[in-house]
Length: 243
Image (cartoon, rainbow, N blue to C red; front, side):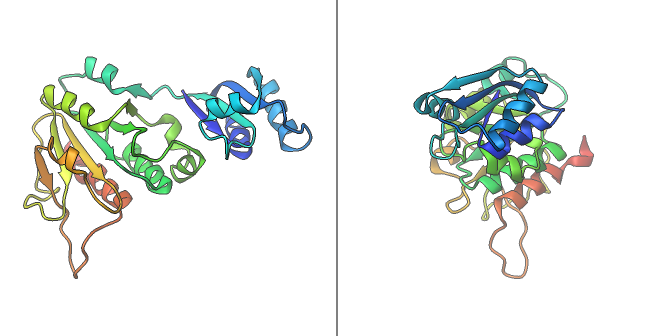
C-alpha cells in the first residue's frame, strides 16, 4: 500500500481506473467546494471509503502534515513487497537483478530511477525510508506513474538488508568511479544487486563495507561522473539482452 497525499495527486489517482484505491482520508477542516468536492465525487463513483480525521490524525497518515493539504489516499500496489518476504521466496532461476538505493535524496532522481528500473532488466528496487527521498508526489510525477506498479522491496535500513542478501549468496556491486572493472565487462553468475549512492557523496562507507564488487562506468572527455538516474538507466539496460 502506498499513501499519496495532496489534493491534485489524490484526484489524479482516483481518476485513474487502473489504480485500486483502498481508502480516501480527508481532514474535517477542509472546505467542501472546489477540488475537495471533485475528490469526494470520484471516491463515491468508485465506491472508495471516505474517512474523516482531525489534522493531527491526517498528518500521521500522510506522514507530511505540512504538504498534505488535508487529503490522502491509500493505493494498493501489488508489486510492493518487503525485502524479508522477497528473500524467503527467492527463486533459484532466473538470476535476479536488483537495484539498492543508498541515500537517493532527490525525489526527481528517485522517480526516474524507478522508471528506468521497471522498463529495463531489474527485478526489484530495495528502498528504505532512512536516507532516501519519501515516496511522495514528486517521485510519482518523475516516475511517470510507474511507481504504482514497480517491484519496490521495502526494508528498515540498507546495511542490514544487504547483509541479509549476502547471506543468500547474492553478489553486491557498488558503482564507483575508480573501480577497475567496468559495469559492461562484469558478468554476474547468480543473483546480483547494484547499489546506487547519494547524489553528492556516492556510496556510503557502511555500504562499501558489505560490497563484493566495485564497478565503474567508462568516462570520456574529462567527464567525472553521471547523474545517478542516468547511471540507473545504464545498469537497467547493461545486460538487457543477456536474459
